[in-house]
Image 1 (tube, rainbow, N blue to C red):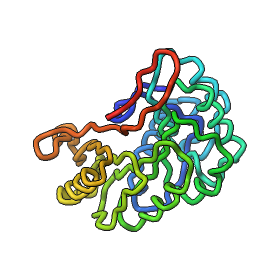
Image 2 (cartoon, rainbow, N blue to C red; image 1 turned 90 degrees about the vertical axis):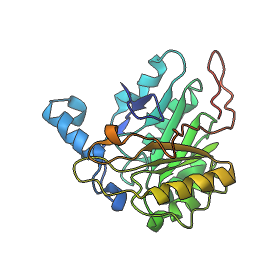
Image 3 (cartoon, one colour; image 1 turned 120 degrees about the vertical axis):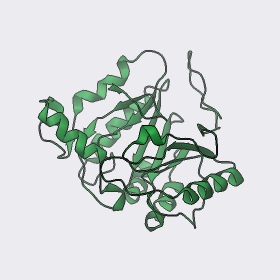
Length: 248
């Protein structure tokens, strides 16, 4: 577990680490760079760098958190990688099911496997499921996502490296958009962002603009048309005890 600087979450939890590239959005994977850095620092969890690994000991971590957390699951991996045993993914879901006071946000690029496994899981309302959409070549991931039983379904259009002219938001609750950052970031076009924001507005879908990116992402900021967009899904999530429901 670690506190996160990612604008749309509070913390990260990585029961698996490592991955491999499968589409253009993976080209400058920040997780791969970070894993190698942690390996060089001697962090035990990353002793094999960015090779795929499951971490059974990490499954108990969410039971130790107090209060209510917004948690990005597997910021350093993809839970639906083909080489992660279904039994382990079900163990991760069991942890999320048993901690309804927290909201768990999962992202995958392997939406076909997500749908294939869909009926194996208990989709409690605190599990938000998303797919990464970097350009129009991977819009089919949305079709797979829509068919799942996730309570909240969202898109992460980051890094956005092309227009999404045929983006269909029926059944989608939330869209995150962001430009690529790092040493050699691919450019983002403002018109692409505005088009997605307008589509969200028309479809009454929450829109979150994360960053323009670039080599100096802090200087570029995250203002769009003179304002920041921090919208969150507007479906109420019934959570016991003292947790506050997340809504727009």
